[in-house]
Length: 165
Image (cartoon, rainbow, N blue to C red; front, top):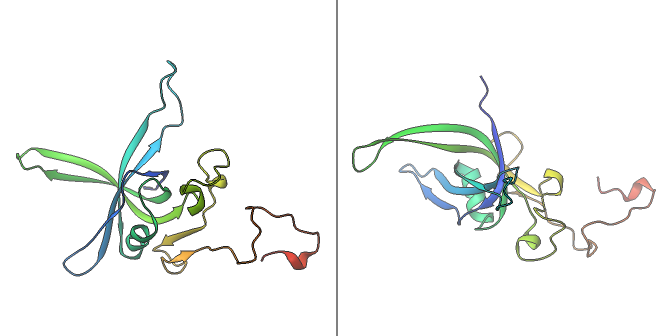
């Protein structure tokens, strides 16, 4: 069986970081995800609001680096939860249990800088992320070198010695 979900959208509000009784960090947040199609009647495109929960270092990472309005890319699994409300009614809710989180925009773009044509995802590339897998700590982040040019892209000579990797 396969249960894997990837979503990209903007945070509706700042993530809420809490701790369990044993001190484990858990962040809850909601992501507004635009639908891929516009209605035929010409009205505004609709969005889905998806609840997410991130545990441990991933939750701490999201709480520290993401705020309301920032573009986020998350992957994880969809989980259904059954619960009883205060009136005794049985309810079901769906939420994404986040395994990895990535920046969907750059900090400068979210602060009103250059827009580069919309969602600023640059083809899905991210400049940092959090992983509960084996790729390092949740505090991975990219920061441009102090000598970086003012624009996001720079022409490189054909000399392989100038390649950044």
